[in-house]
Amino acid sequence: MFVSVTFVFSAIHFLLAVASPVEVPRGTKIALNKRTSFAGPDGVADLDAIQKHFIRSTAKIQAGFMAYERNTGTAHPLAGVGSADMIRRAADIALAEDMGGQMWQGAIAVGTPPQNFSVDFDTGSSDLLLPGPLCTTNCEGHHFYHPEKSKSGRDLYHPFSLTYGDGTSATGSVYSDTVHIGGFKAINASVGAAETYSEGFAPWNFFPDGLMGMAFRSLSVYDDDPVFQTLAREDQVQDQVFAFKLGDHGAELSIGGVNNDLYKGDLTYTPVTHQSYWQVNLDGASVNGNKTLGNMTAIVDTGTTFVIGDADDVTKFFESVPGAKLAPNSAGHGLYTVPCNATPDVSLTIGETTFNMSKELFNLGPISHGSPECMASVVGQKSQGFWIIGDTFLRSVYTVFDVKNARVGFASLA
Ligand SMILES: *[C@@H]1O[C@H](CO)[C@@H](O)[C@H](O)[C@H]1NC(C)=O
Ligand SMILES: *[C@@H]1O[C@H](CO)[C@@H](O)[C@H](O)[C@H]1NC(C)=O
Ligand SMILES: *[C@@H]1O[C@H](CO)[C@@H](O)[C@H](O)[C@H]1NC(C)=O
Ligand SMILES: *[C@@H]1O[C@H](CO)[C@@H](O)[C@H](O)[C@H]1NC(C)=O
Ligand SMILES: *[C@@H]1O[C@H](CO)[C@@H](O)[C@H](O)[C@H]1NC(C)=O
Image (cartoon, rainbow, N blue to C red; front, side, top):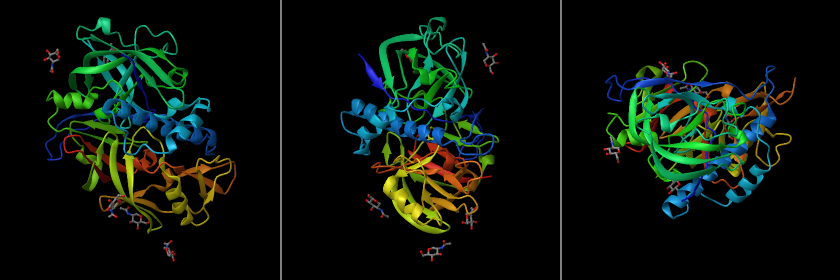
């Protein structure tokens, strides 16, 4: 059987910290890295890279909708009119050369004895993908997963085909094996061993060896539990939560607990409203303390770099930002600029708590050398109907993904 899958380019790295919400130190941490920004050495925003990443992110989400529909037989409630258009447009765009720099990567090991890999940790997809032993195209330079050298590796005779909306793809076979993550072991985890990697996964485009999806099973192209849910199913983690601190310093993924040292104040939890993506209600978006938008649906995605809103919402949002303009060459993608000397205070309200977005993350830098116009990291996607809360917001907060209670928690960084 062939399963067509979509994958994501996400950007997350891990570190793990220990400590449960009940303050029992527990769990482990994985350090995360992210290599590049969207600004060149001179601080000028790289519009081309921004556009390509934007397209890739939205295409990935659409691919998840397709996997959901295959798994459940029903359309994803958020899959809307924008999809076809978005994918077509995405397919026209060449791959960004620096894609690899836009992911967060961290370490895992697979098999017995353990084979080491770096993976992109992505809360916007649900499958684990690694280069397999038969891969001869675009895999050289990555670490290969050898199921035949693993005592615990078992062929599930389940071919897969992952197709990302932007033309990036992988095909291969699904194995069952032990995945070691942050000191925990998922015994019967599904691992995709790729036989082909498209150019988008080549080591010069994609620095980690593979991808680890951390959303819910309904998005899984393998139609199996994601690694973290496998840990939970096998009772390996006491607290079925993982949490991310993203950022330039001390980026960390906590597995099986939250790291209480990384945030201050209380965690504000908001329920997952649909278990596929980490979908929540976004209660509002504010500019300079004025609420400009309220009550939206959002997906919390570590694999998306920007905050990508529905284009109509985003237009309204920038109408309340003094001096904001549609970016030149925006090509209908809803990219905006703000005056470099007047970056607004932007905040999102989630679960009745308002979290500020750091100005450095909202402002991606001048659109050209010496320009007074700076690119904003909140962008609009036509007919999307929902928001994707990515890196440029998530770096400003500590984020807890609570699998057991199906909720997402946010707190200010310590
Ligand atoms: C795998 O990574 C672990 C932890 O960093 C290290 O101790 C071990 O030597 C590595 N194994 C191999 C085969 O590189
Ligand atoms: C893993 O799968 C095997 C074969 O289905 C089963 O016997 C074993 O109990 C499973 N282990 C765990 C920890 O679920
Ligand atoms: C908030 O909005 C009101 C009405 O549009 C406006 O008069 C006021 O200046 C805004 N406040 C800020 C801080 O932008
Ligand atoms: C938010 O929107 C949803 C659906 O669009 C609606 O059911 C709900 O009542 C709204 N909540 C508020 C507080 O307006
Ligand atoms: C958020 O930003 C506003 C300014 O818009 C500031 O007054 C407030 O103190 C900030 N909140 C936090 C928690 O930093």
